[in-house]
Figure (cartoon, rainbow, N blue to C red):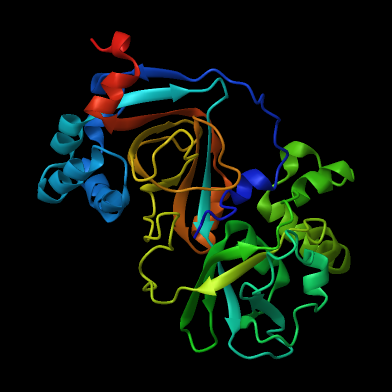
Length: 344
């Protein structure tokens, strides 16, 4: 699932530290206070909401989900059953994008396709931390029949691991879709931050594409740089998900380009509708559904937008690093119960 180490483009740049102790504030809003609410396609959001609403186990959601399958007009449905709640924890809002990478590979080893995609080893969790990335890349798992496939480019595969899921395009034109199955237990270390520390780039210059280009120009040093990140992700094959559908998210359902977001489940119930007002050069005012999580997605005003599959989606996601705000739509009884003094 894309929970992934999902926020690729946040994780490859320097991240500012945040205070552990924060005051949580809830403010109930009116729909008239949501910029662009009337102009959105709420019925499109309703279709995405239906995919995961049966999986929400909290009290009060079941009758709402039943009503969702009977509803014909999305805006009417959301306004009837939900109230917008702005949840703040003192952190600056930050919205990034993620995507499903696609790499070239084969079911058979060859000189072209020689970098293995491994299943989760049975003993990987026995000692808490397993072999490091460098040890695995050097062949520690070779000969254990753990290979799902072999890929052509180790750099592309590294970024696929950061994302936590993706597709492998075979020479025949067919695809294997793979999803997150576990890790070696070592914490993620930013290679972008390491490039800055070494004085190769300044913080504002670092992006996934910059890292990719630098590694490509300096392959020996570049592969050693990637091993600076000791974390290694293992995969499982999920090719039962058709290629035209999105990858599996944290709720074990396909996520939807432009409508699914990854959130911090400490603040946002997975499956809940979320109104997003993202600023920046390419603003977005849209009703999204919280269907995923990510290791870099922490905070009440933090979200990662799923932008689709492949290089074009990757470039779109890579440009995204904007402020704004997001407002969670909560069932009426929950919203009123949080801040009764805010109800008008």
